[in-house]
Image (cartoon, rainbow, N blue to C red; front, side, top):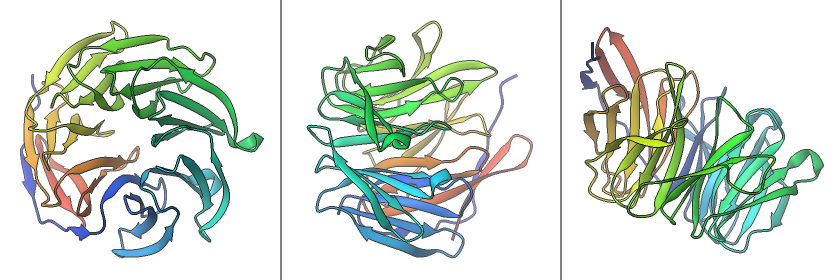
Length: 315
C-alpha cells in the first residue's frame, strides 16, 4: 500500500544573511555552520537564534564548510584554492594549504577515519589525512569537467561518489585512483549527489543542470526514476534519514519534497530567499537546513499522526 503524506506548515522563520553557499548541522550542538559567498564562515545557534561566531577566512567565496566535530574543527574550502582548518571553540586557524589548481567545490568528512575528500574545478578529487599533517594521500582522476560534489557511502565508507559537470556520477574506493564505475544519464552537468538507503537497498541521488533529479540503483547501476518539476538547475539533493522523503533544491528558488517510495512530488516550498544552493541535515534528527541567496532557514519535520507530515520552521 502506498504511503500518503499531508503536509502542514505552522509558520515560517527566515534569517536573512549574505549569500549562503554551504550549510552544515553540528551532530550534537544546536549549531548551523554557514559558508558564505563573501568569504566568511559563520556559526548560528538555532535554539537561541543568534550568531555565535563569525570569521572572515578569505576574500573569495567559501563554497564548502564542514564540522569535524570529533576534533572541534571546521574545514573550509574557498575559491582561492585553499583548504583551511579552524578550531571552532576559539575560531583560531590550525592549518591552511593549497593543492588544487582551481576552485574547490565540495568537501566530505569521513565518518570515522581522519580523512577529508575535496572536489575541484581542476577535475580531480583529493584525499587528505589530518593524522599525518593533512598530507595528500591520493588523487582521484577520471572526470572531464568540474567536480561539483563528493559524498561518502554511509553503508561502506571506503567508497564515495562524485558529481561532475561532465554529466556523470562516478563511484570511487579509497584504495584506487581510478573510478570503480560511472553512471551516465543526465543530459547536462550534474551538480549534486547523495546516498539513499531504503529497506536495505542502496540508491544514489543526483541533481542536474537539465532541471531533473535522478534515483539510481547502486547495484544494477541503472536509473530507476527521474524526478521532474524544477524550472532551473537542481543544486542540492538528499534523502531524509528518518522519513521516506527525498528533498531537492534548485536555482528556481524552490525546495521540492518527493515521496521516496512512489517518487511522486508531495509539495513545493519557496522561502522567499531566491536561489537555493545547499541542504544540511544530520542523522537521527528531524531538522533540515537550506542555504540561499538571501539567507538560510532551518525546518523541523514532524510526524504528529500516522500518514500526516507537518513542517515547523524554527523561530
